[in-house]
Length: 117
Image (cartoon, rainbow, N blue to C red; front, top):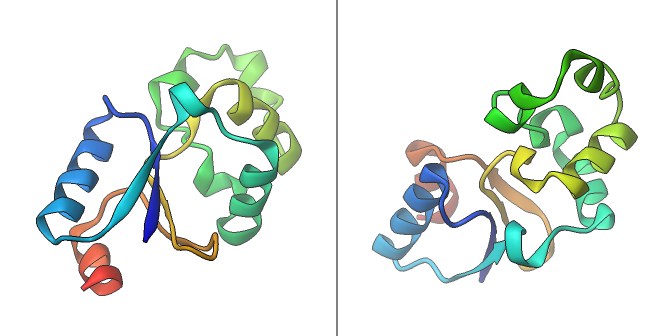
């Protein structure tokens, strides 16, 4: 069983969920908008993959921040504070296994085939 973290109206998350369903991969969905995300979970992800990957600087949420706000995000601690308050800025989806280990970040068919099939 996997946990897919994201927001349901995100096209990338939709592609991921469709792919998992099509390949009969069991998962549960964690909606950031309704359920939020803890700083502890984000710290775990940052240790596993680095805050620079988990924080999506290509997102519209990031682009909406002014230059002063963006310039303050220079380390993991600052990134986690931002991600807990603005969950839309987290790269999507993040997929964990039952042990809480990240198996994928984002959507990539070849990567998914290697991981899940």
